Image 1 (cartoon, rainbow, N blue to C red):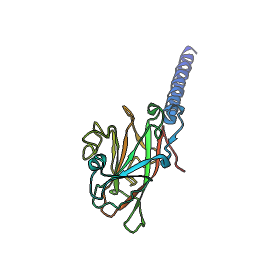
Image 2: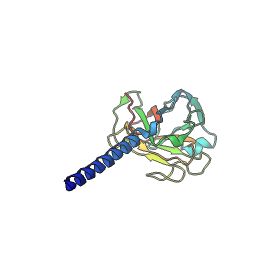
Image 3: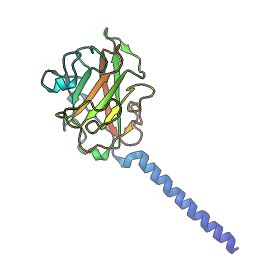
Length: 204
């Protein structure tokens, strides 16, 4: 009888531990309750230089500034630049409350026809300091001034465009968002959503 009581006591402890683990997992998935912050794209200021010129030229003052989410001048070559300013009125007041990021775009050819989403179409980078010499960062992956650099934006292999998004930990608020085409057929990129969130975010 004593053995049976001991076994039941052990099972009760295991059950409690199991419940505790489940609760912790649920909390992690929900991200602690912070509501998703969907950036108001109408507030974004876009910068684009002469076709074929990179962002260093944009920031040197030779650029066109406009309100919009699609580049006005078609890209002239692979990895042409389309830059957005991320000002304090655009970003969440406290970035530390968010652990994940989802960003989606659309692609268009030179004739304005929308192209199918896929790998190898474009990449995206977030930039800490727009006055720094290197705002493009490493060829692949993040760098000291580019905490986020994701390839295959919109494609099957892309992560940032999924509802789950990518995990982010910003040391400070980024100042810029850079979109670059990685397919010569892509003439225009349109930013369609930018969401800071926790756990899974459904765009539907």
